Image (tube, rainbow, N blue to C red; front, top):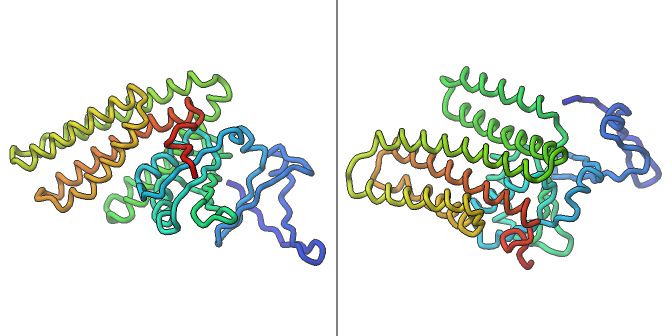
Length: 308
C-alpha cells in the first residue's frame, strides 16, 4: 500500500478539493471526467472509481435482517464479498445494523455503511478492499501466521486478534482470486474453486470431529449433544451437495443458536470450545451454498431479494 500527503485546496466559495497523485490515477486507468464515488463513515474518506463497480450494477442484492438473524446476515454478506459484489442493501433497524457491522468487521477488512435517503431502515454496505494484488495479500497472510506463532505466549487477546485478521485476509484472497478467475475463464471454474474450498473445510471439520470424539464421555447430555451435531453435520453437507439455499441458511442459524447454549450446559469448557469450532466449520461449509446462490441465481431468490 502506498502513502502520500496532500493539502486541501479551496475551489470556489463553497467547495474544497483534494488532488490525487498522477501515478495512482494512471494505475487505476482513470482520466479527467471519470466519476469517483466518495464515502464518509464519520472517521475517514474512501474513494471508489465508479467503473470498478460497473460489473455489479446489473445485480442488485438486498438482505432482509429485520428479524435480527445476525449470523445468517453476516454469512450472506461475506458470501457477497467473496463473490465480488461491491454493494449490498440491508433492511434492518439501527440496533441490528450496529450488531451486524460489529460481527462483519471480524471477517471483512474494510467496508462503509451508507444510509438511504428517506428511509431509516435501509442501508447500503459498500465493500472497499478489492483493488489489491493477490500476491500482496498472500505475503501478508504468511507474515501474519509467523507473527501469530511468535505471540502464542502473549495472551489470548493478542492471538484472537491475529486470527481474526487472518480470516479477513483469507476472505480478501478468495475475492481477488475468484474475480480474476471469473474474468479469465467464466463461471464453471468458479464452481471448481468452491469444490476445492469445500473439501478443505470438510478436512478441517473431520479433524475437529476426531479431536472432539477423543474427549467425550457416554453421559446422557453428551449423547444428546452428539446427536445434534450429527444432525447438523448431515443437513449442512446435504445443503451444499444439493445447492439447497433454504437449508443452508436455516442451519447457519441453528449452529449459531447451539453456540449460544453451549456454555450454559453442564459440560467442560474444553468440550464447549471444541463443539464451537465444529459449528464454525459447519457455518463455513453452509456459506458455500450461499455463494453459489449469489452466482447462479443472480440474487433473485427470497434470501437476497426480499420485498422491502
